[in-house]
Length: 606
Image (cartoon, rainbow, N blue to C red; front, side, top):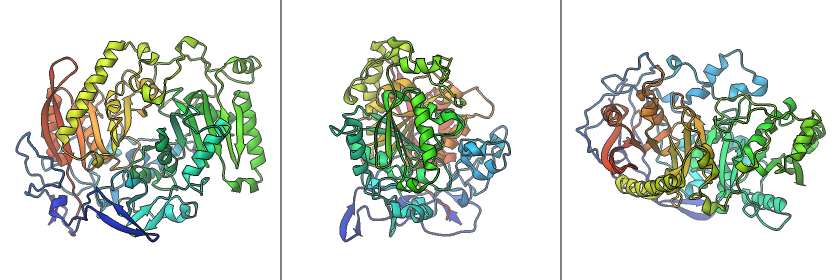
């Protein structure tokens, strides 16, 4: 009979692995790994009675955990949702990379998509009854990821076992196979000599050879078509935060590679809808052979870039040298120049197939273009509504109200600075400061209750981020945080970006655009109660299933919510194969909250 194996009950990889690479000994230390053995044709899997633990221990203290025989079965979501008495069923092994809203087989069945504009690469969620309702299994030989910062350069090949990308992009130094590992040398399509050299070159181009990207005022970057996100990884030493995205397309699993490395990224594409980020959020939008047709459809995609750029922000377009032999390139370049000129962007540098434009701060040029009927101005001045599933607009917005434009302080001061974006949503300075202090205290206690080394957690998501206080309190730890603001709540994401943090809008009635096993820690602060009593196809169980999909084996889920909600989660958690412990912590109103600390068991189909 098949069994659920904990890392301690299976053979374990050494905690320190010596790797002989290119004649140089590299010690990949401070990580732990689980290796799983066995085979069975049994349709049922059993949770073992053993309470053995990995070296980073975590005990179940809420109640005696009942035994469940979770069965391997491809189950779809029922109405109403029902969790079997034997526990949530386990999806068959072939679904170990299941991404519900990027399911190619379902999307191929849709006939009314504009594939010429890549609408088929956007997030398209099937109806609930066509979504799996079972636990997504890890690959047979899944290992606990290598810890940051070693993971920037090396990850376990078995965790993302796809050789196509290495075969196609190996010559461009994206990724190479090294025994049991993938090696990321820091190359890319346009920076074969390494991301560091390329980033230094961009710094020279933006500062007229007087500085780097940081001295050019770049704090947050949007990397379009990021590949395996080496550009983002090598911006970190400059303290530049990058939101990286790429589609789930023929260059399979780019984002999964990036997340496995411990680099912030998500599945997305510039196609027919606005990206799920606020306007005026980035000092730079970067495209290195990102396979985007910027010149098509009257430059509507460049107008989306304009929406996202702050005044004086940079658009970096790097095309590979092969374009010089493309007979269509002169026509494409002419169209790009015409569109950017009409938008009053200034071309400040062009070198080695890289061009850099700057978005204007003064709106007089754009107003003049509009008066001449050369440029459409967006009529809406709505700064409140989130950009969630909004069609792209073939227009640019003018910042007519100069009083709302605020000069941002340095990166180091942004986390605690009181911004006008806070004032616009009714948050007083005193309340903001109290919130910051509250999360500093809570995060300190979180680490104590988790009882693990900080280096064991790298990818973090705050599922209901509010002002970003949780992320700000983690700013000195070796983690990156995806701050999610549900689109049905107060639009606080502009505040988060003003603070120098990153995030996205989302609706937790839908799966998130990421691969399974993306995050080490999920934080859910009054998330379930917000959705409670809402749509019939948006239950607590649906959200828990999605959390289980995106959390890594042995990853943590911290849940703070109403007591009746927590009671339901305590009852359901064992059926999802989560261990649970509860603690009492103070809340912002001088009372106390019960907080659940859940840990996903390490298991496999055997």
